[in-house]
Length: 154
Image 1 (cartoon, rainbow, N blue to C red):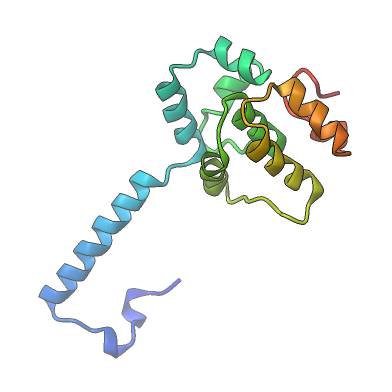
Image 2 (cartoon, helix red, strand yellow):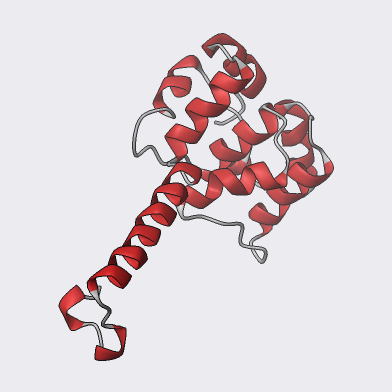
């Protein structure tokens, strides 16, 4: 991290120029903050937009109503299979899935068989039930501990 006092002389500006630069910085940063929210805030927005009740969420994702509350807590970090469960249960496409992964600091590892299978679910089987997704994962040779949903996991 840089200290403002350590900036090279070539970056020295008069007060007016500095105010303009700093003003633009603040404006851009605030815009970025509004557009890039933590996972829990994105989920709250999605739930509100979709008008989802805890019961509807549980029915669509097979994750229980307690999970519905937990994922809305600040700092919550879902496991990858739970995130994919949410995305499949709510019918999200790949851009939306990536939007949810980004604030978690995660991405799909294309050389990871499980991640590759999850990508195929999202791109090729959007709208499939969680049960159907697990059948597909099984046929792809994915172990049950990476299956989706709350009721299928052993």
